[in-house]
Length: 149
Image 1 (tube, rainbow, N blue to C red):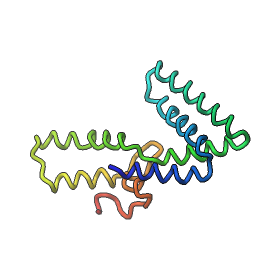
Image 2 (tube, helix red, strand yellow):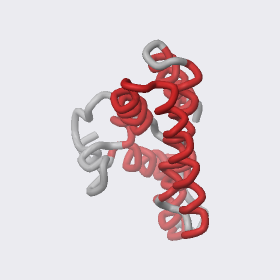
Image 3 (cartoon, helix red, strand yellow):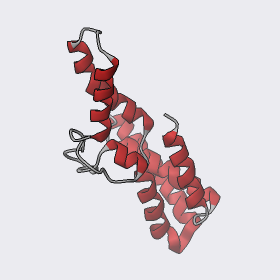
């Protein structure tokens, strides 16, 4: 559960060596609001768009000519970060049907098999297509499909 925090700390330390401290914080705020635009309703969407634009304008004022390069650098690196809450929600959604069919009588071996499947199955679509959660977390490619493991 704490791995995403360590990943975030590593990203922050790495980027603060390149991007000034205050500007990095401003770009992180802009990135955060950028990612809240899509799942939000129309009122919240407008709020997050305005906040994103505000923080980007602040960063542009602080960085001048380097803004586009450093913004892309920070946003790309932050996009690699796995968000813990989305992982928890995904795990619950994946194992709920299996737990329901067992009526609460699940063995440790069955639960271990569910965990193996969840961690080693490859995504079929989206920006993570072809990658498994464990590969994203560790940064190492899978050696074999989940059913062979």
